[in-house]
Image (spheres, rainbow, N blue to C red):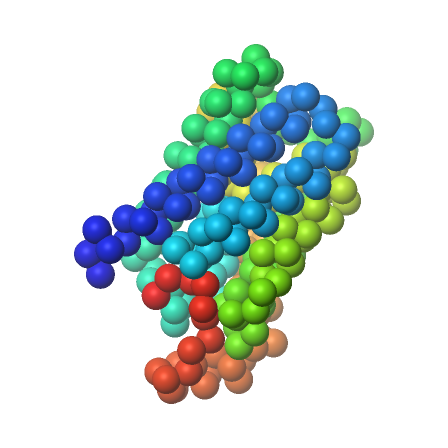
Amino acid sequence: MTLSTKLPAYISELIGTFFLVFTVGLNVSLKQANAPLSIGAILMVMIFAMGSVSGGHFNPSVTLGVALGNSCKFATADVPIYMLVQVLGGIAGAAMSYAMTDNKITVQPGDDFSAFKAFLAEMVFTMALAFVVLNVATSRDAGNHYFGLAIGFTVVSAAYAIGPISGCYLNPAVTLGVFAISFKKIKYVAVYLGAQLLGSALAALTFRVIRRSEIYDETRDEGVKTISILPS
């Protein structure tokens, strides 16, 4: 495919990630009690809005998980470009949030929690997020009408569960976006990024184990269409 063909997907990832991180920034800065619902909802609607264009990743960890878990339908050449536009969208969203609130968000564990505990929290729930995406959006179940809900509610559940521990970032675009604006606590950035990328790799591995026969059939028979919302 040419750049002009793929450009809508790249722009969609930029826009979706912008709105996701912008929403995260406002909710965290203004200390909204129902932040998990707001964040999960914006992710859900952006996936429904642009999933058919780009796949609705809006998260480098999801992109990595999809590429590792079901590469038959996602060009590996798109991975770095997806990640780049997602991070740029994240920085823009964090900058817009700061412009409106004058509050900078710091990437760090919650009070009374260590960096190791934050690492575990981010790794486990990033794995959960990428695993859900792989199963509802890249398997034979793809084409359903609930994939956006499943993914959005995974984020809602994670935010309520580990928000006090790590802040529930689960997304390198969020991590790097808010760090680019605050430029504080750099020692934690690598911890969070490592956890998020490891979690997505574990999700891909688990997906390939439980969907082994399906992936094998797809590789063997090009006529099998298992992904309906991810760009080919």
